Length: 186
Image (cartoon, rainbow, N blue to C red; front, side):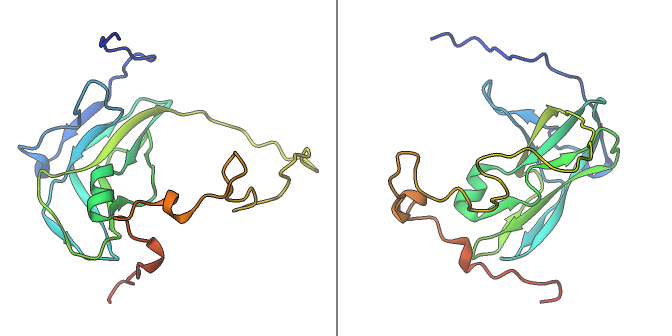
């Protein structure tokens, strides 16, 4: 097997500006040759209580080239081990935004989560943007699915066998149905 790094797309250049609160922090970077996302670190220290969220400062701003976006995605280890995820996932940083990049972290776990300045909190993935134009029509073409929405295709596996609860989540992962979302001021 060839271990040579191969990318189907040429890298793009993204201008990045370190802000005063980002002094001494690493800029977003790939942790390995095969990483799809660049790790981004926190530029502040804070505690996220269970059921709450916070827009965490990163200490930098970017100028993304026209025709691209940068997606903000959660880190799988934080999600599995602590119930920490990014809301609005994947988040989109538009090419015309020039403010500080912030990561909306949410604590779906049962314990307070400490974010320390310099902790890796999310991943950034640049992606091309396909623009579209809507064309209003009197009726849409028919499909087998039709207007069937959420859950309309069922939960059975492709083989026709039902998926058991044991196949859905590992024993050490809790259900989100028990998470109480706190409202501001609680």
